[in-house]
Length: 222
Image (cartoon, rainbow, N blue to C red; front, side, top):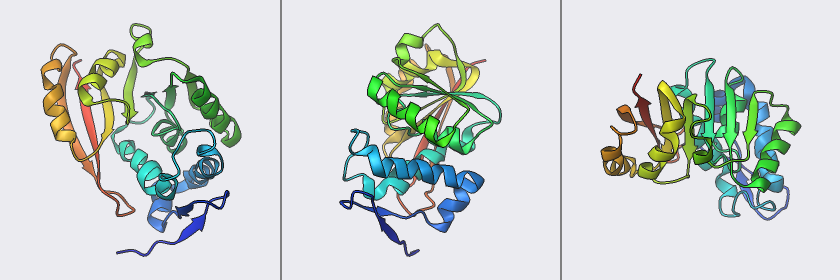
């Protein structure tokens, strides 16, 4: 097992794991901006109600690295819509890591949209558009090549929310845990009506030796 080092968060109350060398390699030349985002979360995340105190010690492994699991399934130079962006997982991680993408963050809560805008402005992220809306309010108004989500709803409900926002031939990518296959089974009856013609659960190992992430990919019929 690789030994990990730790640093103290700025408020002195939480101990936050440091990014390992493998994490630095994962994010490559965008690591400094990801690290800047992480520091903003350490400084303000709990105060602004974005992340709980019990989650801060696992900020890198459970949130930042976990969010990066979708990156390998997103083609170059496409539009991505992230539903329920919240603190920025996975939407801001995607936008920072992949400057080639046109990323749209959809978040219904105003205070969270203000946080997302603050991060975008401070770090200088120029490939992001923020929408203060619910996913269902965007049905019929536009579609994206890729729609992503994390910790929004079970897959059955999530499929109804997201597939109308996916372009024909595009995909929805949902970050899920160990019960991903069970969620796929429960959601399957709705797939035909929502034009899902292909589904796969990808298991993505963590570079921080945390539990593997499951990325559920639903592809929309062309």
